[in-house]
Picture 1 (cartoon, rainbow, N blue to C red):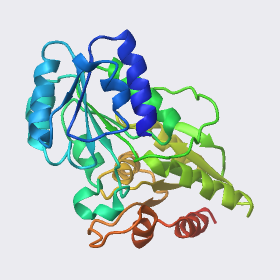
Picture 2 (picture 1 turned 60 degrees about the vertical axis):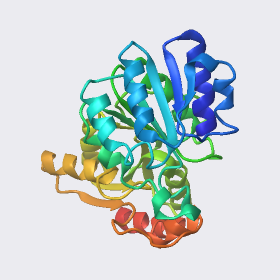
Picture 3 (picture 1 turned 45 degrees about the vertical axis):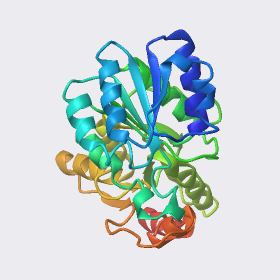
Length: 304
């Protein structure tokens, strides 16, 4: 996803001189595509994310569209006060890009796990929150954030995420995207779990269990209308995310409660207690009950 992001940002910056990129001393072998082409619009702020956001806010006040880039929780939790007060309070066009979210940096331990970011960012005033599910959605989300005024948050995986969408779907800002059709239950995914959601649907299709898969690349604004439609259509909703409480599952549960719909609802997400160990992304997801086998088991039981 990060490669798709930087390639798209370069393309946009070629046409839009307002676009800047700031980094917190990382992104080597990735961000050079931008820094070499636009050295006057690129700044490495060092390991000083709070200062980086302050500088970005100042640039945005002069009419720039500023992307700030760092690992997982560093551009969100480490400098949350600056994002809240300097950027969101003034409704500035600063776009926070967090790479390696969820458990992508599993081997680095809990300090590098981005597992609360969607909930935190969604609470901030004026903030657009986007969590694309594959490189195709990442290209669209990057272009969208440039066009949308005000603060934005882009949640990315690390690298090597497969392309799920064959072709370019018709994306609509703030709307879910149907990826797989089905009738017995609706599985809604956000972020990098999209490929897993499709694999689950394909495995169950071989067992004659029909699962509809939706991708939710925009968390704020949120497509509550589509959630209600799907709940009435299939009567069973499962959410899937590499994030703890406060993310997609919380938003969907709130929608269903407000609509007064007594449907079956199961949120599949990370546990609120941190996994106090380091390991691969797949290993840690399994520790949280998000292995492919476990997800298939839960979704099949809900659909029956």
